[in-house]
Image (cartoon, rainbow, N blue to C red; front, side):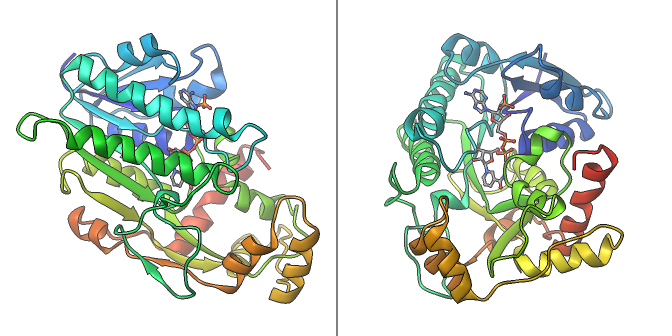
Length: 342
Ligand SMILES: NC(=O)c1ccc[n+]([C@@H]2O[C@H](COP(=O)([O-])OP(=O)(O)OC[C@H]3O[C@@H](n4cnc5c(N)ncnc54)[C@H](OP(=O)(O)O)[C@@H]3O)[C@@H](O)[C@H]2O)c1
């Protein structure tokens, strides 16, 4: 088949939306999942609408299994590499968080070299590969910054995303410019928007699920940078023929306070109960002191200070207008309620 675009991590939240976007444009998609026999990983892909002559082939691939990676990439024109372990904490951060990104990305790059057919590699990175350990209140971070100080003990996810991006960049820099594939890295912040499967509620949507399930009696005064999953998918697809090769693109739609998100949901879904009371900063610090999963230093950095991102290069180069954040948040909920995922 001609002109195949491989999407790794296709069962995932962002990967599924990329597959959906590509099929809506009539592309030939090879979607990789870890287990073809698990309906929860493929059911939502099989029901996606396909336009024109588009096709969907779902193949089994594990990032640690070199043969499966090689055969997934073999003969492809385009590769969109979203697969990674999206976990912030683990008792085994090296094996569970960092290795899938580093070993997995190495295997993808080797498979691209072996295939010799790939013209575009779009690598899903993150703001986590950009944000350094400390930053000043009110700073606007750009793609000039790197999370080079992320460590296994303090920020394994940042380390995984930063290291994988560096692997991709070094690989690309060492290839002959005249013949190498185009390569772009995409750096989303916190991604919200409609989940296509209940599997999609465990990553970034876990924050909204805490509101949906009312797991939090009160809210912390936290600002969240948000981008719509449909915009993230669109940028990955546009990056196949737009944007600068070697480019590093932040995708951020804007910022909202957690309390404002809860109030927006309360207004739009009034028949449900939502936690909306925001505790003061100093109370949040006391809670952080006793909380098993949050440290005081995290609370001091992230609750008192506000961080912004410069996503203008992406909106200009990909000619995209970020979806309104209210729309993103409101439209996240129907699939959750209608499928009883709450
Ligand atoms: N969501 C966000 O807010 C956000 C923000 C910035 C960047 N990102 C990045 O976006 C990408 C996708 O994230 P997501 O939110 O869509 O997370 P997700 O829903 O957890 O998707 C991750 C995908 O990676 C696959 N995967 C994990 N380990 C694998 C392995 N060893 N071999 C093959 N596939 C493997 C998962 O497969 P299974 O379904 O089998 O687990 C899943 O399909 C990641 O690179 C993440 O770092 C996400």
